[in-house]
Length: 417
Image (tube, rainbow, N blue to C red; front, side):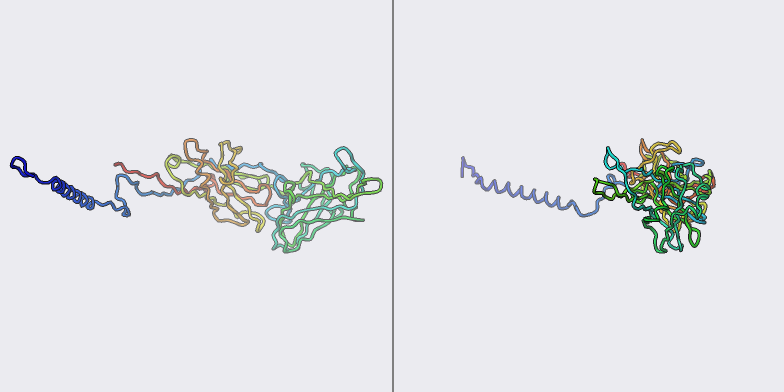
């Protein structure tokens, strides 16, 4: 097109030139981006943002000097799940005594009426919970004791009554038997062995003694052992109408169930004691530095205890040594956490003399934070007052302090940009 002597190019040609210039700029930009491509799969390289390495350390904490002590009397004989009976046993010489709930002279047919009954037969039930099966010729003897025995009975009182004239019966235990429930039945003329004089008001009491080829002990079910508790069973016939009758099984539970020991070891204040009867527990305090309380991640915590002598007990009868965190530090009366998830457990056996080590991390973690629990552990034996096991461990007084081996990690040392 020509205007006033000037020639003007087509609009399409101008647009094409602009497009070429824009395309060139775009390609240059893409080439620039390609030169700084981000590699998402490659390791990051950002020292100003990433945390440093985790630093893991170990430390050993000895118990606070003179702040580890033993206390006893938490449970007494008969309050545990089993009763001890022994014969020439180095760990302890024991006799069990049992008094049953009185048997009334009439049967409670309903809540508002009683009827007379005829006694047909009787039985005594006793549960053997554990014995050393390597000991042969084990026999359990049942003796008649004065009806109204009570908690004041002594070892001598019981032992004096164990005469041939007072034998009710005996139970020969097969050499292969470790635990079993025994039922001794009396019927016909044999019922006279369990005859209860009128002056005894329906009360039957008995003692349990042991004989074997060598010194040993057994555990039998105590009054708190549920279905394994001793029982005095009476099979009676009661009249329903003038022409019919029915037989009933009438069991009498334990009124008093305990055992008496010939000698009871005194609590030694220079060592840490757990177990025995009356049961003993030990409270141990540990130092707890600020860096563990506030700024460390606990990875492991191992409690180490050194026996002062081989642990006495019944061969094969494993006991559980328990470590519990305390809620409040009140000495012997310190309440402990009952949640099993926060209880450390170690199994100990008779004759064990090596260092006892077990994990207590879950208890120690509770010592952390601004309102952490007191840095102390309460040691006890489970079940209490129920076995021959009585362990003594070194203390800070005897130069064998309990130890805590702690493995921990420091908090991430974030770097400053």
